[in-house]
Length: 344
Ligand SMILES: NC(=O)C1=CN([C@@H]2O[C@H](COP(=O)(O)OP(=O)(O)OC[C@H]3O[C@@H](n4cnc5c(N)ncnc54)[C@H](OP(=O)(O)O)[C@@H]3O)[C@@H](O)[C@H]2O)C=CC1
Ligand SMILES: CC(C)(CO)C(=O)C(=O)O
Image (cartoon, rainbow, N blue to C red; front, top):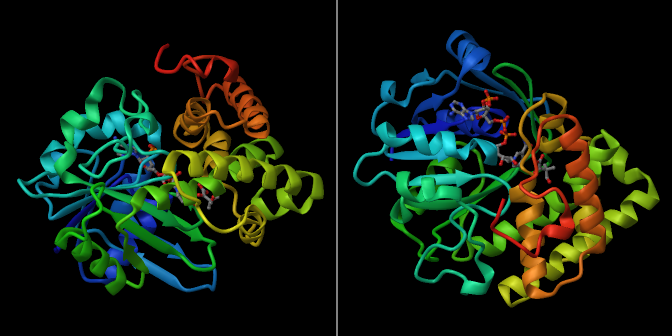
């Protein structure tokens, strides 16, 4: 595996590109606007938490995938609302065997896929509205991905990475330890990005989601980073309750306990002053990942009969804040409407 394209060279995609470059991969990026201009002029630079500087001068950078051509692998690292745009443009990057790894937060569009997929009651009908990703990417190419990182694009092409121990976990939706997943993981490992292949990518998705369920809406409302928001004991207590509710949803959906405690998850988050990416989006007027991070999990809570009063309140307030800022239009305006999933 040598030719890898990052689709969406933002905070996370840019960081991943630098690691692939360290591994000696032929990295191409799909980017646009001022970011594309900056990448073409100066490449991508990441300053890590301990002050190290990583750099990537992509082999090619374009807003038109036709300029980049078929790849050995594609890594998609866009925000969830941008996925239909990926579906519309990804075709030129795909050779007959090209896998597409989705390295994103939230309940992913591919969640219901694979022979060893979840039971029908754990699958929502509207994760891929219109089926556009199914049509453009298809089941056979998908690799799931979860990234533990904390990145901010401080100026176009310049990223600050604030996580104490970055890592990537990838996995096939059908649980196989495939050669292609192992090759992609080996490439990231060679580029100093710890990367593991799991047989249980859905549990990993839920595990990571626990951090976003609490940190996303709380920091959206406080307009502060993690350490500042969670320093208030009232907020910390609410965050713990939110994660406990999230863990109850995960346990009901997965049919087994997630492991770990809500307190430990919040304390790990509180150790960084990172502004969650959803708050960065609000501040920059970009569409929010409220569906993938909050509303889809709450739909599953309704289905499985899990009570989520804290998450309901946080989500309703976060939706209102986002609607006021014109960065989110609820498909249904109230959390109360969630049981009637799939419409609107
Ligand atoms: N930032 C973080 O610390 C973390 C983020 N994540 C998750 O990783 C994923 C990516 O987040 P993040 O990197 O922060 O997001 P960013 O917004 O920083 O990066 C996404 C990039 O994709 C670009 N993009 C989207 N669609 C297209 C398109 N059609 N053509 C070209 N470029 C496109 C965006 O451009 P434009 O801005 O012009 O739309 C943007 O540059 C999200 O799911 C997020 O939740 C996970 C862990 C931590
Ligand atoms: C906050 C963090 C780092 C972990 O929840 C994250 O995933 C994000 O910024 O989107």
